[in-house]
Amino acid sequence: MLITFEGIDGSGKSTQATMLEQRLRKKGERVLLVREPGGTELSERVRSILLDPGVHINKMAELLLFSAARSELVEEVLVPALRNDTIVICDRFTDSTLAYQGGGREVAARDWLEAFNRIVTNGLVPMRTYYLAIDHAEAMRRRELREGGNNGDRMEQTGTDFYERIISSYDDIAQTDCQRVMRIDGRLPVGEIHDLIWADLDELKVEG
Ligand code: ADP
Ligand code: TYD
Image 1 (cartoon, protein in one colour):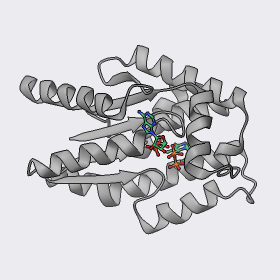
Image 2 (cartoon, rainbow, N blue to C red):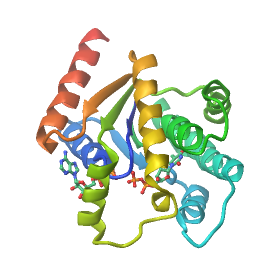
Image 3 (cartoon, rainbow, N blue to C red):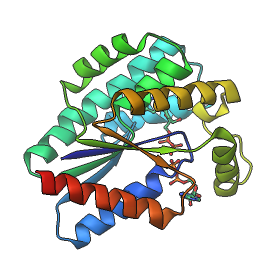
Image 4 (cartoon, helix red, strand yellow):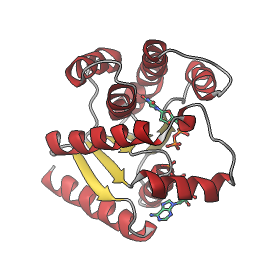
């Protein structure tokens, strides 16, 4: 079972992904938590290039680098774990490409990117995606608290308009792919969000 978390930087994905991982582990489930880009040696190296504010990357190269990191992660880590009946939790996955490269950078149309994502992942689609929705101002406040006023990574140095386009892409994905994507108000307290996710997963399992 593949579960993914999506949302803008600072929306609470890592917090929720970790809470879910720990609760599933306590229940005795086999769980793997990974983040994108990352999770293999190549993907971690590509991550450090992608997030380095000192490196200029054009938008097509950016799409291809995120996708290269994902391809490695899927083949080397995700598919073997899923075959082994492990619950895989991924902090970001293909919707990040639709929202950031599609919506934010406007590198290509959504249907093109969806087809491209299918090629990159060999058709691997999450069983459930939790989209934590917050506005850009709230994300900035949280990042300020977390990082204490530094300028952030290369992606985070982009302006408000970029984030507004990403948010509207995520909202669009949540609407058109509502069977898979659950949109959650990311301003709710951490424990409440976790309870919503836990209840949803419980229901999914009951339905088989
Ligand atoms: P992301 O992984 O999406 O970047 P994090 O989980 O790292 O987000 O959270 C960003 C910051 O916001 C952290 O300091 C975290 O403690 C805080 N945070 C996470 N969830 C909430 C929430 N629901 N309400 C308020 N603050 C939160
Ligand atoms: P990361 O620190 O993992 O995310 P967060 O700040 O939310 O905790 O940084 C990953 C960055 O890469 C983030 O700005 C989103 C971006 N990204 C894309 O633009 N496209 C993608 O396909 C992925 C996976 C991430």
